[in-house]
Every structure is written in C-alpha cells, then in structure tokens.
Figure 1 (cartoon, rainbow, N blue to C red):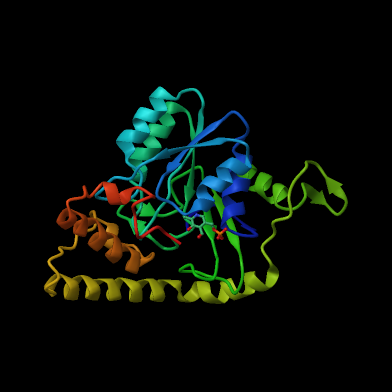
Figure 2: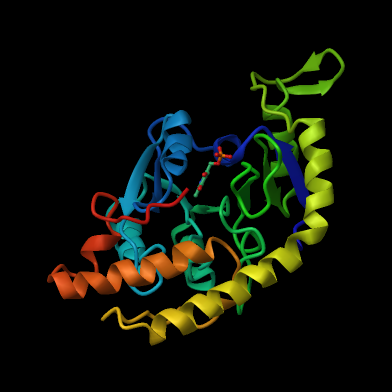
Length: 276
Ligand SMILES: Cc1ncc(COP(=O)(O)O)c(C=O)c1O
C-alpha cells in the first residue's frame, strides 16, 4: 500500500471513528455514505455526533451512486463535512470521480476499505485515494487476525499522529496526555499474526479471483434461467468477497424474473446479500 502512514487500532469500526475525529467531524456535521454497507460504517459516523446521509448504490457497480452523491453535495452544502465511500464485493467506488467531486465541494474523503484488502481498480488499490482509509482485520475478513483489529492509513503525517493520540488516551509521552482520547490499540499478538498472514495475501487474493472465474464460467453455463452480470471494468481484478460478488449478480438478475426492479434489491431492506 503506497500510503505514508499506517496506525493500528482496535477494530475497523474504531478505525473509521478515529479517522473521522481526526478529520474534525463532529456534532452538527453530515457525512455521506453508502446505504448498502455493514452497519458499522453508519455507527462510526453517529459515534462522532455527526449524521449519516445515506446514498443508494449504482446498480451496475453495487457501490455509491456518484450522481446521487453529487446532488447531495449541492443540496446539503455546507453541512456535509466528509464522504465515506465503501468498497464492497471486491468492487471499488469510482474513486477518481469521487475525489474530484469531493475536492470541488471542499469535503474530506475517508475510504471504508474494511472489506477491500488488496482490492484494485485500474486506477489503484482500495485505500490509496482518499484523505484517509480504514481497514478491518476481523477474523472473517480477507486479511483477518485471530481476534479484532483495524488500521487507518493516510499520507498525511499530522492526521496519522492525531489518530495515534486518539487511539491511545491522547498520550504523547509516558504520563503526557494532550487530549481526551480513547483506548483502541491494535493488540500486539494480533499484529504478530497479521504480519505473518500479510505475506500470503497476494496468493490468497489470486486464489479468490480464480475461484470467482470458475463460479462465473460454471454458473453462466448452468440452466438456472439467470444471467450473471459482468463486473465493471477492473472490478474482476479485485479480491474481496468474491462469493458476494457472484451472489449479488445472481440476486439482482433474479429480480428481473420476479418483476422487481434490479435497483430494488440494492436497498438494504430488500437486499439479501448485505455485507459482513
Ligand atoms: C464495510 C465495513 N465497514 C466496517 C466494518 C467494521 O469492522 P470491525 O468489525 O472490525 O469493527 C466492517 C466489518 O464487518 C465492514 O464490513
């Protein structure tokens, strides 16, 4: 990951929460995020006192619909302080366009890459676009510890230092505490497990891609009456939750058989492939 700084924290939710605090998000602010994420994304926003603004997903990408984001940035200015795009199902949000929208609106971007270790688009890897990015190492993740863990990455040394302080009781020296922080350190044993598993991540990601290609080939040939959607360009080069990717495709396409709009199954209430 070509980011300057990586700060280990207690879990992915705290990674999001502490990063938002470091970005200055707090009560009275609004934060745009995906309606179809795991609940922790919204929780991290409400933990700061800010209000989540939910945006539905693009039915082809299954990640944030950027036309709706653009509208919300205009209609809700100046309340929106940040955007938290969520990379899901191995598919990245269209980050170059999102960053462009965010820069024009003067808002910060925190990538939720909790499910996106080693997921890539043609433009780069998950976590390498925004002002900051958050990862989870929950055991079920593509890079999972033996217990909870998380990390914040950023190129900004001051933001990294702020997260380091916030995660460790505001501490800068043995008995020197400069702000009211939290206790959310990455456990040393989990860090040791992760440092060993990290070496295997590229091979495991490749194995997921190979399995997905197999699912796609075999399911496309099966007499199910369902057709699989193609991933957007670059999407099939990513790694995360490939079973989710296949599931999402079949779920959304089956909706056309039942008469439901494909978009309907992308909303949290109707979607049967909600992430975790
Ligand atoms: C998209 C997303 N964001 C955030 C989180 C929170 O991570 P953690 O469970 O490590 O707190 C998860 C975990 O499942 C997730 O899937």
